[in-house]
Image 1 (cartoon, rainbow, N blue to C red):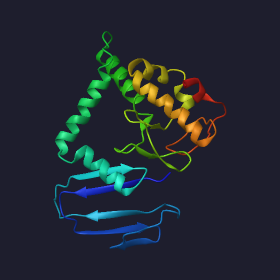
Image 2 (image 1 turned 90 degrees about the vertical axis):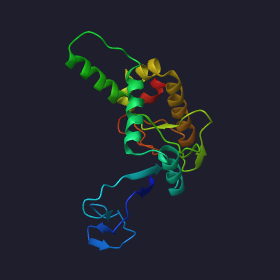
Image 3 (image 1 turned 90 degrees about the horizontal axis):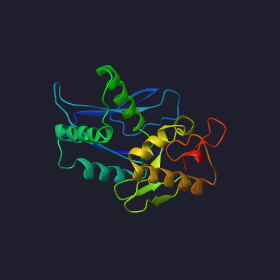
Length: 210
């Protein structure tokens, strides 16, 4: 799959470059990750600088990544962003009020609940666009989310039912996303990753979810 990002910083960049297995290229702006051990880029700031980065991610375009970051963090600082994320998770985990047992038992319970809600995850940009399993740019129906990353063999026995019980609208969107995946790719698969079809185990576990 192809991912795009856009990053802005609240402090000036002093230098930049790229690296590959062949070495470091100061001032470089492009590097191929096709070779073994990949490639990357680096930035440097003034010694002791306190830097906040705002990074947007998209699977459609750089412009989409920039728009996503602007929509979600344009007027927010670090502490406000962290506070909103905490409030979102407090609300999600608060759908179950676990009592009894020991403190350790409840910590284990809510940690497991947190893990169960990490995936599948939404895939579209703020304008609703996403890259489908057929490589085409598509737009999810307004008011819905398009989900990806289905660990079918690990979730159809219990996690899918849990999400449906706690968040029925999200479960509906997840199931519709699986149906859309089959429509776009023409096949069922046990373990699709992002917008790529791959089958790591035999069987059609996702049919049991839908």
